[in-house]
Length: 82
Length: 250
Image (cartoon, each protein chain N blue to C red):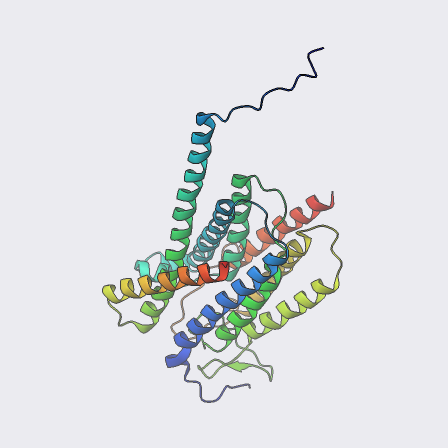
């Protein structure tokens, strides 16, 4: 008795939506931080390698070179991901 | 003695090394994504990105960390450009594995993701080691002096073990052996590859300085209780991979 009555579907709570949004936001921020640190480390390694061996590069060239390498890396990853 | 003609190591080494290193990254990544498409990680895109970021982060920390540890007594007194000027493949692979495991915990993923990495790692290692072999004594992967007829002249006129070439051949041999085997559980091929690679590095380091004479003006490599940092990390990595294999079998 009574068990065969269909229950109305649970209403989506705004609180649940907010929680889900915050989880996704947290993941996105973490992804950005970890990914950027890794990419900067890789670009800095390549620039540092040239700096140490070449010996004649100044700070601005290294920063500029790192930025270009970083952009190339991001582009390559996006291209590979597709 | 083997000598590559028309290669002026001192001038061309960084360029050759950098070019082949980039090619190794791109070719390896291309192979990985090709493999991954056959066996996709069916989870939300944000989780996939987080997993990739964790892997890259772990690889960067491991690669730089082991490079610094390898020559700690010298590098600790140098400017920051020297700290970031090198990487260790072994550190990168083990750091990347640790990062992936950390990422899997975060997104609640339990399935193994490693097998798709193996062909990519093989391709990357082979291309990268060609770059090391052609870079003379500059990139610190050259062997100790040898009296054998197949010693390689890295530009300093001393016949040395062609350690990068030896590693490259050994990696292809390991891959050929692993491909012929039937693997009962996902992830076991990756664990077996990493176990074999860790042991290979422990052994091959005995053919390099500081176990033999280094090239003039080379960065000194430290020994801790008789072994280099790479060898210690290789032993720890081999034990870790062995445990992972045992766990999957249970």
